[in-house]
Length: 65
Image 1 (tube, one colour):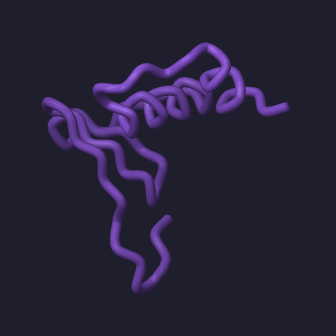
Image 2 (image 1 turned 90 degrees about the vertical axis):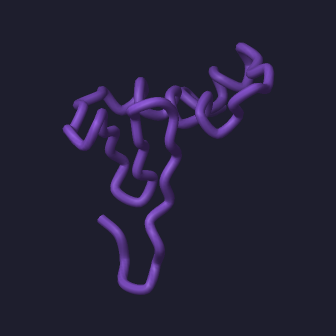
């Protein structure tokens, strides 16, 4: 959920929209359900669009130390 006074953080690509404030993915406005790790991976890749993301960065994001 968003907190008061905090603007929503959105990442958009194609017809998809990731709302980082509420941790949801939408396609053309419709909610798309994802498992937590899949959502984390999608956010990592969307935030780094056009950049190389290493296996180590993915592992660290999904499973930590």
